[in-house]
Length: 86
Image (cartoon, rainbow, N blue to C red; front, side, top):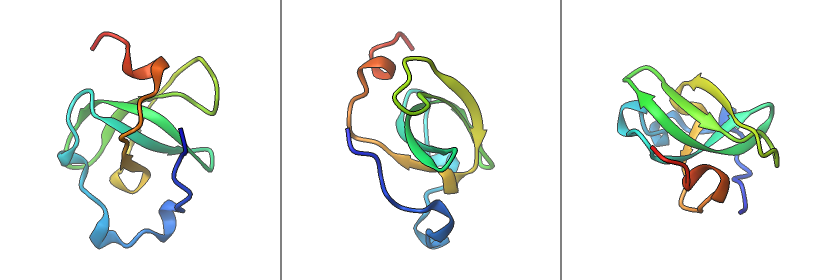
């Protein structure tokens, strides 16, 4: 699974989808600790989204609330995140 190489700080704000466009269980990329990690949306609002994500290649997960700049839609399946019950 290839993570994006894009720096979120260099994203054109006009191309960033708002967090209200994400729904529960949507697969996303999450930018944490200078790397994109596979994640899943838990809930979202117009201001931020709460996501569960897998830091690096870890089998563990983290939960964080992020603004839209630090999220991207993800098509790839992450077997450790996407097969859990929602």
